[in-house]
Length: 106
Image (cartoon, rainbow, N blue to C red; front, side, top):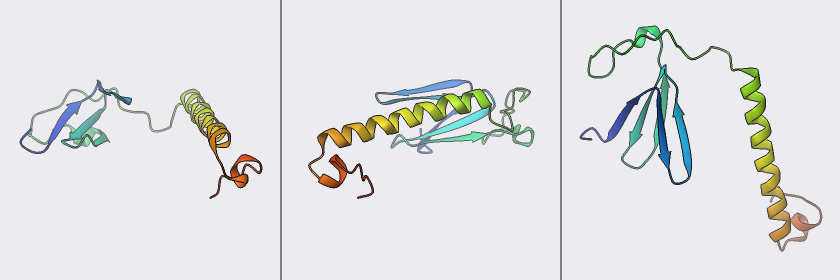
C-alpha cells in the first residue's frame, strides 16, 4: 500500500512459509513491506480506525487475563521446543562444554 503497510482488522489469519499468525476479533494488525507484523488490541475508545471509519462492535474484546489453559498449552509447547533445541545442540556440537557438560551458556 502507499503508506508502507497493510492493515488487517480481526478476525484474520496471516500466513507465510514459516509461521501463522491469528488476529483475534478485537485486534488490528499492521504488516509492513518488510513483513514485520504489529498487532494492536482494540479497546472501546478505539472505535474508529486510522481512516476515521467506524470499526465493528467490540463486544468480543480480548480478555484482560490470559486463559490459564491456553497459557499452560503454549508454555509446554515452548518448553518442548527449547528441549528439542538443546538435544540437537548437544548431538551436533563439537565443544566438550556443550556435548558432555550440557553447558549451553556459551
